[in-house]
Length: 93
Image 1 (tube, rainbow, N blue to C red):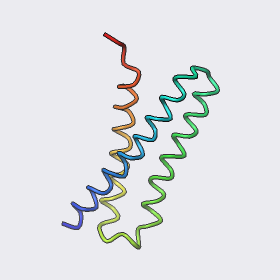
Image 2: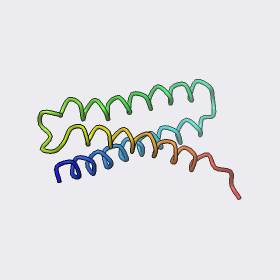
Image 3: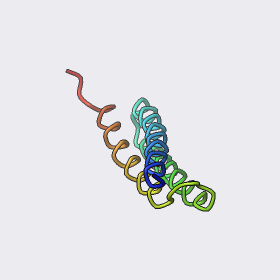
């Protein structure tokens, strides 16, 4: 059960970070310049590092499995960022 709770928290934490990445993407796409996209890439990388770094730094405090939490955070963050980026840039039908 310890691993399940850790994985659920990690999935939610990664989803929150992916949502922040979505908002960064949307703001950069509205500006549609190379400098905006470069800044967005830097900001998204910072969000990823903060999300994973927070889990790492709280590993001694978390009441559940650190390994399950960090893996689920990384998986959720990676997959949802790609899915949401595709969703934002999909062609209109």
